[in-house]
Image 1 (cartoon, rainbow, N blue to C red):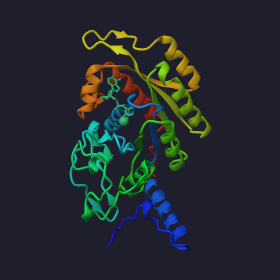
Image 2: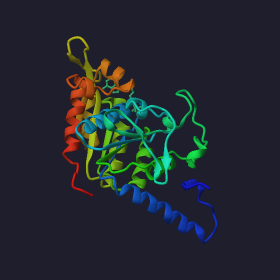
Image 3: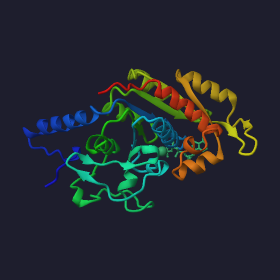
Image 4: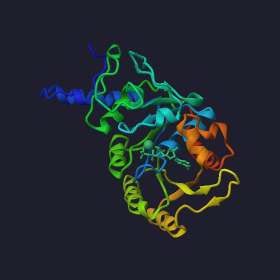
Length: 299
Ligand SMILES: Nc1ncnc2c1ncn2[C@@H]1O[C@H](COP(=O)(O)OP(=O)(O)OP(=O)(O)O)[C@@H](O)[C@H]1O
Ligand SMILES: [Mg+2]
C-alpha cells in the first residue's frame, strides 16, 4: 500500500473527491507550517542565471547558520542539486516523507535530478524507488513542485528557495500554489531582448501583491578574471530602460565572471570559497538583504 498519494492520483469518485483534495491541501499546509519563509526565484526568460543565483543564495544563507532548503522547480532542466553539490543516490523515506538530499553548507535539496537514474537521463515519469512507496507521476511541472513541497520532509526551515523554470506562466502557477511568498526574486540579464518578458513578470508580481520583490540584474557587465575590470556586456540604455519599465527595485547587480560559472556548475558555490570574487560579493550582499527579512523567532 502506498503511504503517499499524489495530486494526480485523485480519482473521480463523486463524494470522495472533495475530501481527497481537502486532505492533500491539509498535508501541504502541515508541511509548510515548519517553513518560516518561501522565496520564489523566477524569470521571464531562460538561461539568465536563476539556478546559479538560487544555489549561491542558499549556500550563503546556510553558511550564516540559517536552515535553508532548495527546491528545484525545473523538472525538465534540473540543475539545483548539482549546483548545491547534492549527490544522486537512494532517497530515504519514512512515515514523515522523503528526506531531502544534503547539499553544501548544510542545505537541504530536492530536485528531479536526484530521482533520475543518470545525469543524461531524459525525464520519464516513473516510480524511482518502489520501496519508498512514493510516486512522482505528474504531467504538470506545478504538480511536481506541489509534491516536492508536500511530500518532502523538509523539517524546520528558515527559508525555502524555489528555483522556477523560465517563463511568466511558471511564476504565475507558483503564485497560485504559494499565494503569499515572503518574497520573489526576478532574475534577468539587462538586455533589450529581456525587457518585455521582465515587464510581464514584474506586472504579475505586482498584481499578486507580493510583499517583497527584487530584480536581480545578472550579467551586468563582464568582470575580467585577471584584473577584475568590469566591461559592459549590454548597452547601458537597455539596462536602464529594463529596470525602469519593470518598476522593480534592483536588489543585486551581478557581473559575469568566468570562475563563478565553473565553480557554481561544479557544485561549489563561490560564495563559500571565493567570497571576494566580483559575482560572489554581489550575491553575498543579496544574501544580507534577504537575511534581514528572515524571522528567526521560534515557531
Ligand atoms: N554572473 C554569472 N557569471 C558567470 N556565469 C554565470 C553567471 N550567472 C549564471 N552563470 C552561468 O550561466 C549558466 C546558466 O545559468 P543558470 O543555469 O543559473 O540559468 P537559469 O536561468 O537557471 O537557466 P534555465 O532557464 O535553463 O533554468 C550556468 O552555467 C551558470 O553557472
Ligand atoms: Mg535553471
